[in-house]
Image (cartoon, rainbow, N blue to C red; front, top):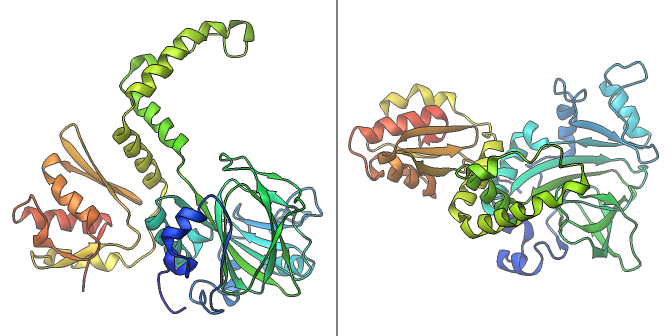
Length: 391
C-alpha cells in the first residue's frame, strides 16, 4: 500500500474498531486478510541487506540467531569471540537459523512511524521485532507471551496453531513454553495478512515451503494494576508514613511478619480510600511519554526560518508527538517524546490547545496569550522539536 502512515482500522478491516475492542481485544485471535502489497512501503525482503549492514547492529543485543535445537539462542559470536560477519549470518540462515532483530522501530524510520501511529490510537507502548525464517527452520516451541501482538506477514507464509485454552492476561514477564492442547485452531497467514493474538494464548508458528519474513508488533498495555501502582506512588509523595522503612530484620523472617499486619491493613485501607485518579493517570502518562523517543524527521531546516514566524504562520505538531500538559506549583509543562518545556501557569491554555489540536493551526489562534507572546512560545516549541511550520 503506497502511503506513509497506517492506522489500526486499516490493519483490521473489515472488522470495525468498535467490534474489535468489544469482541477480540484481550479475548480472541483475529485474522485480517490484506492485499499482498499492502505493506510494501513499510518493509520488504529487499531491505534486509541494508538493515544488516548498519554499523554495530549484528554485534548488538538487538540481533539474534534463533535455533531451537540448542539450549538457547545462537549468540552473534563465533567460537573465537569475534563478531559475526554478514557472510556468517547468511550461512547461519542457510543452515536453518531464524534471524531476529529486536526493536526494528528504532532502526527503520517507517516502522517507527508505523508503531507511533498505533500508540496514538491505543495509548499503550508499541515495539516491533523482525523475524526472517528460512524454509528449513526448526519449529519453535509452543508458548504464550505476556504482550498482545499483531503479526504482519511481509513475505512468504506461516501456519500458526493457536490453542483455545489460554493463561488469561498474564502479568509482564510471565511467559513460558507450554504444549498445545487438543483443540488448537490453524491460522494460515499469507503475505500482507495481519493476525491479532491476545497475550496468554498458547501458539506455535511453523514456516511452510518457503522463507518467511514477518514483523511482530508487540503491544505493552498499561494495566489497571499499573494505574493503582501509580496512585500509590503519587500518594507516597505526599504521605511520609508510606516512605518509611520496614522494620529491620523482618523481611526474611516469617516469625516476625505478624509485626507488619496491623500497619499494613491500615495503610491499604487509607491508600485505597484516598487515592487520586488524576494523579495516577498523570504519573502513568508521564512515565509512558518519558520512555518514548522522537521520530526521525526534518527538523533542522525548521530552525533556520523560525525567526520569520508571524501571527499568520500555520504550524502543527510534528508526526508522532503525543503530548500531555500538567500544571502545578504555579508553572505548566508540556511533555512530549524526547523533551518537555516548562513555563508559567498562564500559558497552560495555549499549551492545552496545542496538545489537543488535531491538525494545523495559525499562531494567532492560540488562546490566553497576546502578541508577541504567542510568537515567542511557538518559536520555542519549534526549537524544542514539538511544532513544525507548514511550508
